[in-house]
Length: 225
Image 1 (spheres, rainbow, N blue to C red):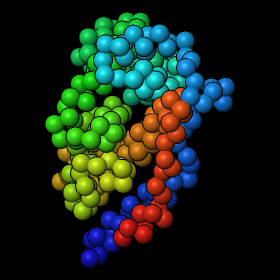
Image 2 (image 1 turned 90 degrees about the vertical axis):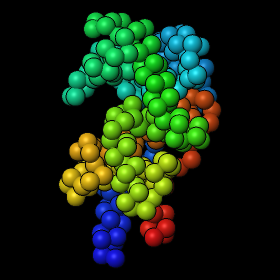
Image 3 (image 1 turned 180 degrees about the vertical axis):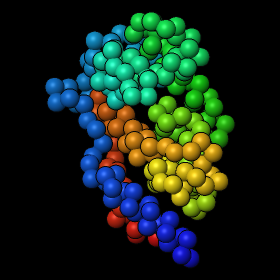
Image 4 (image 1 turned 60 degrees about the vertical axis):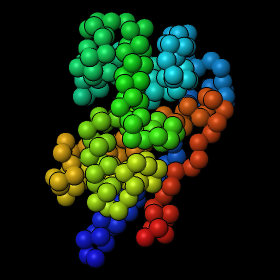
């Protein structure tokens, strides 16, 4: 139908508008592939990973993507510190204002664990659930749920990130989609979330000695339809 063709064209345009024109982010050139030393905060990542189900190198990858290990970083949205927690999220995770890096890592670890618990009942596959968790850490769970609803409208699998919900979320920066019934949380810079997930996992794969597969581009998308 004309409506479906328009949706496919929008998906292709989103991919062509920067989504398949670069590879996932890799760490600084000084880092060795599969290294055991990532940052001066490694001992803190390890300590908090020991009390959770998270690999410390994954926590480090999130920190690298969020702030490049800059404890003074502040986003235009107000996220702060090494792990770029929003003030309300930090407070909810028990991180008082003015806390140090240890508390910020602890708060981020708690938040990731909370998101994992929220998604666990629906997304059973660990690898897929991790991507929903990371997307929620970046964009907020509400926008990810919007992308799931939009995925259903587009005939995609709402419980699979790769090639499905990731494709829907990039459309949430377009008025036709973020004003639709699926988008209860409005506008989202979905292209940022698309790359956030891939970048964190790309860095994690690099420092763990487990390179991630290449991103699917618009050519593959076009072949599917």
